[in-house]
Image 1 (cartoon, protein in one colour):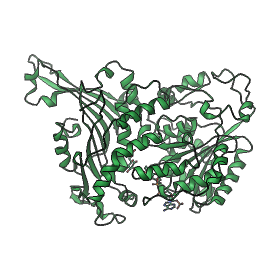
Image 2: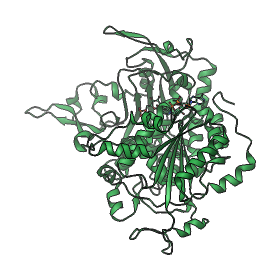
Image 3: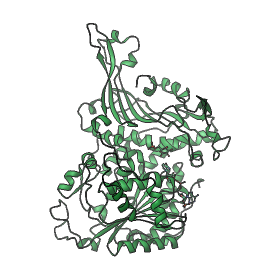
Image 4: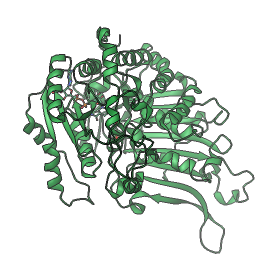
Length: 586
Ligand SMILES: NC(=O)C1=CN([C@@H]2O[C@H](COP(=O)(O)OP(=O)(O)OC[C@H]3O[C@@H](n4cnc5c(N)ncnc54)[C@H](OP(=O)(O)O)[C@@H]3O)[C@@H](O)[C@H]2O)C=CC1
Ligand SMILES: O=C1O[C@H](COP(=O)(O)O)[C@@H](O)[C@H](O)[C@H]1O
């Protein structure tokens, strides 16, 4: 058993009962009213027509087979609001009001404060939550409702372009927030939570969403207790599970097995917040709805693809967690690999979650596990600059002085299929680097027999086209092209065709957690990770991680705030690649 895992509980006898109690039931959904959601997700139209569009752009029918309408007697009492397009039989009428309870387990923690409560408030502000909802915080810390509200209110903000009534909205939101203190492994405490939830639900059809914002060693305990004692009796119950999903194939498989004692796969929403980022969402749109890209999307035209993540700060405050995982597990195996799969997948049959996830998993299964010689690892060391000194990773008091945990890694991966054979997919991720950014870089091949090759100077490599999707900060999509410098001569230079989001779409971009929470509420699984995707992802990284740990590979040290270890350049050079972010022309 891996260090962070707790064994599954032995409550098998409850399993059948629980799964049937969890049988989901549809809820009437309302659409968000705001412009941004509407534009991004076509919800204005949805609103007009009384149906909702999910983040895949499909109308969300009020019910799906997954939601288990057929077998649920309560569903028979449900009817569509007038005029709503639906696949429901017209005999269903809305006699049952529904309510949504969102319980943030680990409510006192960093992620809850920083991301989850603010995202819920943003959804509330944008009118994206159902009329009748409650938010519960659950944690061991001693707090009452007011103290929770106080805590939450410190991190709530309004969108820059939506300051109107902000204070009122915050008050309204906070009034819907409640707290219950309890242990994560106490069925009794979850039963108390259930009682409070029921009071708020007041006999309505109740849907319950749990967000596990707790350390992974207590995931299973919390799921067991929530499932046995605090699942919805008549609506759906879903659980959002935060990463890390294990630390290798074995522990991840064990976690899935344990969770599935209490939940069906459909109820588990494994979150990878990078999938909720605007530019990552846009990847498929760019590719599949523009004729100019898709025909080029293969080994015939693409030389290499780079997935780059860097942060300009260290593990400040999270060293305890990080040291058990390292950058490969923290960023590469999930965020970057998920983006890679989306980037490289074949055209899915449709935008439905299962069709997309089927294609993603095929990509992962076409890749060979990472080899040690295709990876370099690094760790930041202390550095002084301009009179300021920056700590080394091992200066973090929660990190062992002799830690070999990588805070930087670069890797070359290959997809062995007809589309991508031989194309290096490079990944680079690091903490305490010179900048904070996440981007996808696509470097195209040379123009065959280029008429203008003499006008480029000597470096033809620098003159190939490059498409950059800057995921953050300052979202942008730009294409580097060669262009004639105006004038009588024939000099070429590199220019950008630049779609800068802040110039084109001058509104705040919703946080990834907003999109993902909304999707979980709506039952849209497309941006959540299915268990077979997870298995395949771990399969690629586990042998490497084991080898690095068993051989105690020493990471190359790089100064805090630098561009990372030189080894990353050698790795890229081995495959004739230059890192696009370090070309000096960005
Ligand atoms: N923070 C971040 O930026 C990110 C976090 N995550 C993941 O989200 C989850 C939550 O993260 P985060 O909020 O940072 O975590 P925290 O360490 O802040 O833990 C959340 C809460 O869990 C309880 N808790 C902490 N340690 C223990 C323990 N050993 N045993 C029992 N309860 C404990 C505490 O609440 P109390 O004592 O009140 O019960 C704490 O407030 C984790 O799985 C993390 O890996 C993922 C991506 C980013
Ligand atoms: O999952 C994680 O992501 C954050 C980076 O997220 P971002 O949205 O701020 O880019 C990273 O700092 C953290 O180590 C990791 O666990």
